[in-house]
Image (cartoon, rainbow, N blue to C red; front, top):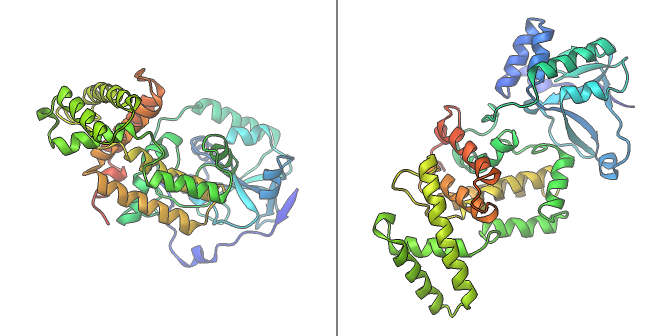
Amino acid sequence: MTSTPPRTRALAARRPWQPPTELERRLRDASLADDEKGYLRILTETDLYLYQSKDEVDAGGPRHWRTMEDELGNWCVTVCTAGERLPRRAGWVAACRTLEDLAEHWPDARFSLYVNPGSPSGMRLRARAWDRRGWRKAAREAGVEHPPAVLTKLTGPRSGPLAHALACGAHLSVTNGVLWNEIGDVYRDYERDVHLLRDVWGTGTPQEWQRQMNALLAARNSPPEPELALRVRRELSRDAATLGAEAWRRACTAVLDEMAAPAEAGAAVQEVIGRILRYEARFRADGLLPPDGYVRSAVGYDYGRAVGFARWGLSARLCPAEAAEGAILRAGAACREAYDSWEDFSAGYALGRVLRFDTEEFGEWYTAVLEPHRLLTRDEGSPWRTVGWREA
């Protein structure tokens, strides 16, 4: 075991406390009411964060549980909720756990569980064997699945260009169950974010992160054929109803002939035109597009992912906060340049995603963008309802 001195929050003591998220407000209310069962029920809805040695996590060996002595002299394992995560500190990284995980792997019954120490949302919970059985029971009763939600950090940016840019990454934030408006210590979990970048993106160094980020911000991460076809359509007509499919196909052929493109490029563009038309028909049926709407551009998929990629890089310690924030702001500015509204951007993001990964099966690659679109366009607390598209 390792120990640290009690954590103090002198600044918080001098200022009225503002709940970072709605969840911490509910925890505060349960704590004030001394409602331990209600407090546990709330904990089952959220991720909890342990802080561990970065060197130990990177080495992949045994992990020590970080403990502290509380104001009464009790030794505790401390965890934070997402809104109360600590500022970044050298040598320490956040590990995401659930209440049930803690119950299953608790290090010693002599330790208590201290949630959000030093905060009005905090509570110290005894962790004897029968107490941990109560944690597991609460987790079973709550179930393992929680509906997708727009998670907002009330103390984070909620207006202005940074909020707008972060909201361009909200598809992924909703899908991954993370706060949409935070550039903090982690995105979801240090170790998982490291693995995501390494295994999915082939990115394990600051230099590789920067190369991938440059490609996303230049809309070069996705295949070029869809954007070429969409650009030709934009240039020919502002209203898709006046431009038939055959005229669009002929215009693309003419452009490729002027470019002296190889025959296989022409075949690829013709194939993608058919896919775009079929996806747009489905988008209209599902409300991703209005009845007479069409997709202006698919670059939103790269720009929207750039927001998440910046946050993953920050979490994985591949870039400093300044670089992550700068990239996010650039992605937001690029989205404003390419689109006219949140709905316009979302349709472009969705098309870029399904053209890249879905094979017209309309399976998970499609539903995982349709459901966040519906939530973000309808939820009263969504940044797409509270942050203006041109907010800068």
